[in-house]
Image (tube, each protein chain N blue to C red):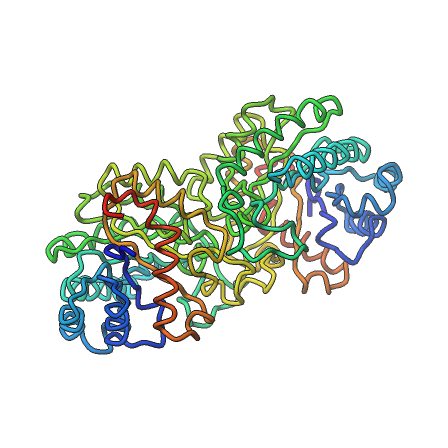
Length: 299
Length: 299
């Protein structure tokens, strides 16, 4: 197996702390890890950087900045401040790619918080067009700071089933519409199969992203059914669901993407599996469903 | 309240049979019903037509044809035959609008059937591009028959979370791309807020649909969270969730739509509520969230 582009996202092996994830990835022959901020913050960004470097790995991305849709100024200011900290963390751990989950409607609480009854909300809390415009405006506010730190803001379109509560950014095309107002080195997009596989315009938008030098990451995991009680946890191992990985991977390869392929799975059954077993499975699925279609000469 | 454009879809009052639904709608002052085929078939299309006519109501649409994505010829032929029966039923009950839920991937069983383990499926079962092309081809096969019967095939884009198991038609734009190959009197689209509310291109596509005379129906119900264990049952009363009805309704009105507004809710709690109460609630929500934005001079 040629795993030279395969990256373990720390969300996939939830029971592992940062050091365990890095060592587990290294044991399996993976050259890279994608980091979530919680794992970085547990040890601090400087130490996180050393742990990864000492293992001889690289960081493919940091997840996540974002949650930029607040309608009130105080919350918006707090979100911008937190995103600046995320930019600094990304630079410190040694990745140029900060994945941005932009946030949902003001009507929806941040994940984990209790919701106000929707029926009691004023109409502006449901104004999706306005929420999307706030994302555009606030990305614009963050760009200079990110650029100073050599960090690219990587816009992640989330599946439309998360449009209310997690990300008003719902398609790759919409992400590119925002990104293209900025330099490609500063604002990019990530292609996450789980979120975009259904899109009738996907091939064209991947090509557009590639032509513009905007593809900052390729994340793979599968769409499995039935949806989990918490829809966020419905992501499955590549091959366990309904996504056509050969086709989408070829589109990404044809678009010129040569970076890491990150596996990011939120799934209770996967989390309940020993980490080494999970990494072995994802490496195996990568080798069978993804790698042959990446078009690398080496593969 | 001016309910002259409000239609009760029989799926909303699941405990009611056809006659009860028609009488319940009439009692509440609604002029129309949207019918599901199960309710029609229980009494037969001729009798269904009489029940509706005797109550002085009209039929806003018949749900549903579709499920046209089968990869094998026998299943495809059976689906086409069933759709021809649906066309005849639509004409018989007195509506020109047959709503089409086009079907999911061959890898996914029809709703209610057991799934083969996805990992055992051959790749073509996941070929979304091919499944979509089969929809185009088979709509084309059905169009002459529908036209002979004065019935319009109404393409329904379903929320992308149903792309694997229910409808590979995922956006209004994609539906219009298919519809526009045919006469507007023969292939139309329905705007169902639940399925399309998240779409960043929605305003433009509604305008496109209106300009082409393609809007065959406007269905309203709300996006509520958390998703139900069966995601299909997550539809809520208008106002109970996160959809911006004033805005979308204005887009539909601006597009020139003057037809019925159907309320179609799949939700166990709604189904457990007495029908008259459900109809009163939906009429009230229609009056407060939808009607003021329809732009009718009468309202």
